[in-house]
Length: 252
Image (cartoon, rainbow, N blue to C red; front, top):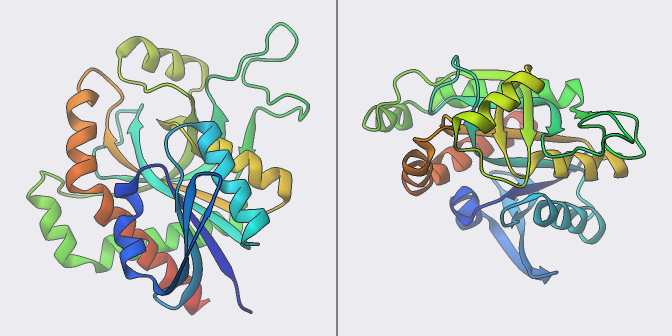
């Protein structure tokens, strides 16, 4: 069965190598976003750089669904860890997606998404399984890249499956991090887009998965770690993860 995958990254660096590799490339523009349609290692895909934040990500995801009729959405990019067991270079496949800045109290429970009765968007277990398998294969098979990671003091990157929280603020301090730890104790990492993409896909009934690579630890060191990782490693992580996803989908 033919399937078209929508791929989103919030920063150009996260998708630039993927875009470079697309074959039979067709370029379109909608809503101030550029969409690159074609084939990536044998899968039909549409790739877009959404820009930062929940609204920008939601706009991009909606366009992928309505203009390009994608069958599933994959969001890849970097994130800040909020738990000590995650290190820079580790990868998280999102299980549930929370919005840590959603708060309509006293009318709704904290984090409850208005008019849904839920506080998070779950990822379909099937999507989690194939995405996790793809990430595992990437970490196992891309030995040359693993050697390159050693040059950046990343020695043993691992995969974790767990909850992710999104919000329209950059978490880079002990107080904000502690608030998330206290109120959303299951959350492994934070970013600015995934939960918005998840909500759009939930509304349209489209499968999605959010895959995040840890670039910093969401504390005062993030102002230094985030730009370093973005410049040196974000593009390659995005490329190799999506290459593994293409191989995983073609083999299933």
